[in-house]
Image 1 (cartoon, rainbow, N blue to C red):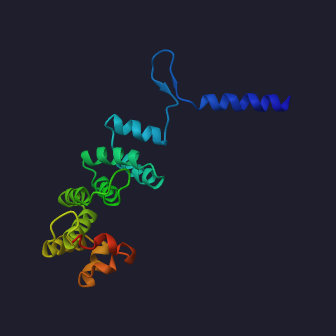
Image 2: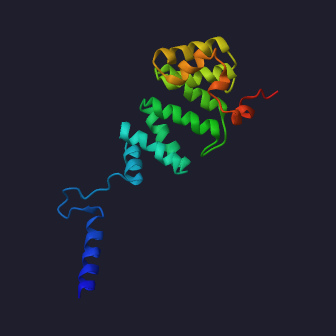
Image 3: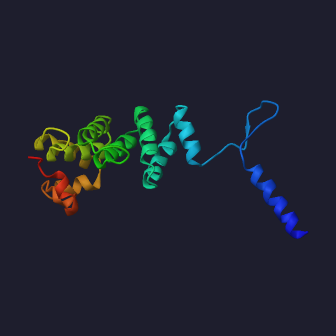
Length: 181
């Protein structure tokens, strides 16, 4: 008898947790919250905010790169600079698409122009390395200096090291930033 009551209560609680449409047309009862489906539904319906856009980090880390791209592209279009820097990360590493240093640098530029210190730092690195853009070490230093003035610790570290790119790039990545010719 106890087992039957336990089973019935589990079934009732499981069905109660599912979203349901109110019979009198008043809306959805118990809508999904805090799920990837809800995040992507919000994005698809044009609702972006810091929390929705930040969920892209977890989506990326879970390996759902195509889903992360969709979210970050929409968030970037809405002006969220953090989404622009994540799009650069995806493009630069070929996550959810082919590796595209030109597109990565363009995302960094957009974030930098919007005033984002991480975007300025990354775009400065792109310019100093000539990755995705024509090399311009002087302009790259200017962007890094701006990011340092805004308080970005890696930019301060790089500036303090005389712009030695090795202090901010792991040795394992040297192949990626070597000249192609």
